[in-house]
Length: 481
Image (tube, rainbow, N blue to C red; front, side, top):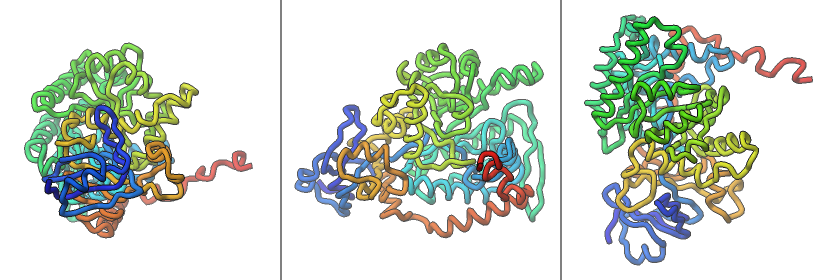
């Protein structure tokens, strides 16, 4: 058999239905897909490859999947994070008032590069900072993000949607160094999202997919809105959800907690194409609703929301729900390293139950491979190393001091590895990271562009004061004593 690439000599973690692990295995790739998986000795006799990658001492896994993150956050990480709600305020101001397309392009390339170097081949990116600050006033912002991702070579599921009622909302663009504000209606945002979908969904060899979003409706919204505005919000959420389902897109919502899933169910928002993030402090009937409707959950154990309350991820999985892992992006204090989030997830739930057997190692690996693919409706294409699937393959070097001695490879992978142990990344059969370096792009150029755009953003919103160490950075005198 003639193939393009043969990766041979490593431990193959297939994540297939039987969860087969092949010691001294090999994976053959042709025309962007996996065409054979098996023992290296047999494969070497059967396969003729144009390119052979020696993976001795490595473990091979499917490309990792991050099911919840935010575009834009890569240029706002740490900024204002000590000032109560200041970081959230910065997000709102930047994403609606101070972020031209060049901002979104620079951030997309930076975030995609981070994901690439950490072995994350597919990631969800909400085009903004949360439920009321989506950059969907005009299509050029999403286009800039998509171009940046395509250049780096990873996959992005770009979630776009309107802000929550009431409308209009104030947005602004920048030209010649001047801010130009304008009002934006729900109808304008919805049409923008449809235009983005039409131009970008399932393009560039499957590198870009579009999802639809409407902000979560919670008790405080019904209480604080006028009855007319709340009725508008309900109708808008249903319109966006219906469009997503009609087009076969993921419909997502960011920030469910304490009763909001009941409300979403009453509005008809739950279902097999719905992905809900955070989901903290759910009631037992909400857990049952998630499982019964086939609704998918993005669990973000490192996020601020997981400090405010607990996502009952283990209970939802026990009920039969699909729960996958998300990073919640890199800001204000996180990273795109899914190894970090796997480890955080295990400790998070084990501490809650005071039981070290909760959330087994293999299960948490599933949550950001095949489980992530299932959550995004992509399990027929990615998430496991099986014949016929896209060749999204990551090699991790186990010959590191923190990953020795050389036994129990899966335990070392999940419990001790980090994103910097990733050596090679293949997306759709294309080697886009080789020996730890990006192949398609110049990393120094991406870093410089990110630095330049971040400084322009800081100047636009007058956030220089937010760069200083806060007074309580080292704690108070009593704490140090």
